[in-house]
Image 1: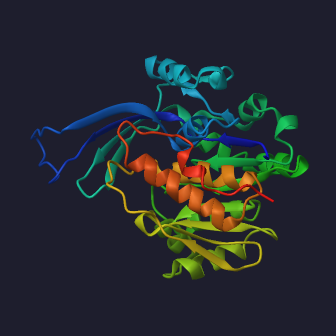
Image 2: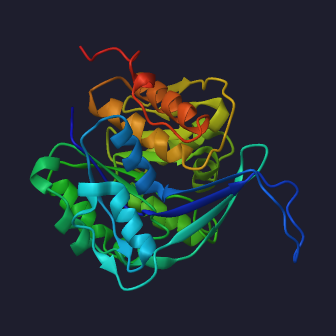
Length: 310
């Protein structure tokens, strides 16, 4: 299996809900569920790999408060070299709704301070050679984004493929944000976007056509994945053929981090030299399990039916 790592945003998630209807200003409502947990795209992916019993590396930072200490404890030895930013830890409050959707309120916090020198100092480059690095939180990690060219040069020099999941831009898919993402994609071998992100970025209504359009921006043999929630996932592979898999019907508890869980499972199976279809199936099944269990479970049972690589 090829080595795996993730770079990006790890923060604290406070999940509350479900809330319906949205409360009027000045009022108070009671909700049935709350959970304080590790969050952020990079954090969710790393937790999934850990739950699946996989070896991985993670480069992230924390703030200089109690939440920062709590995050480090949640990752144990993986967080031993995380730098402490001189500011509070990023906190995201997620309000869930009865239909499984959610609304976030997030502080900028520490994640904007993560820098490339800090990241490369945390990673064992030699061990990552020939592997895949998942790059997350591109519209939140300001200092790191300013040094993306150095990151991409490092990856090229060490035969490391970059899998990009930018997340949703705070100010939406403006022309400037589209241009940034397209530039990043030109240096990445895998794109991992949800359906709305894909169609907005590509300016195309059909997700399959949008995936094909994004692939033309990327290096040869690139893969574009479109996460479609209850409709499963699709991808355009190196041969430019469209592959699609459905999602199982589950009772949704909450969908927060579902795409991040998908990323981790998909990349894990792909790193084992499995087919694109098998990798999509694994991503969908593990994500479906995660969104339907409280507390969330990350076990390997959803991968057991994936056949061994020849």
